[in-house]
Length: 111
Image (cartoon, rainbow, N blue to C red; front, top):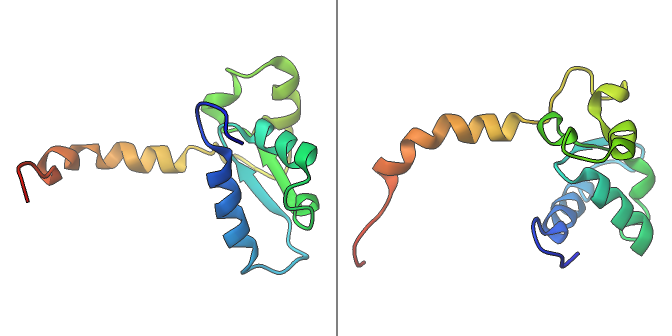
């Protein structure tokens, strides 16, 4: 959980908050850049044992090809019917569209 790079505890905190508002019978799909590592961490350390059976993990398309072959076989979104044609890159497309706002919204000086 405390390794360099993306901090897995942020994703766990978001999922924990989400699960407090959902019925236990729902099946939730999570496309995440390091979904394979999250899945293995949850299993290894027994985090969120009530919700682990309800989760279906995948890796977003852009990041999937950078992972090992076995990881791609298990977590590539095109290998599972749950994802349809979703690529898992919606947030990154959204932020990319907002990047022209950065210079005009940047605050400089002493306040």
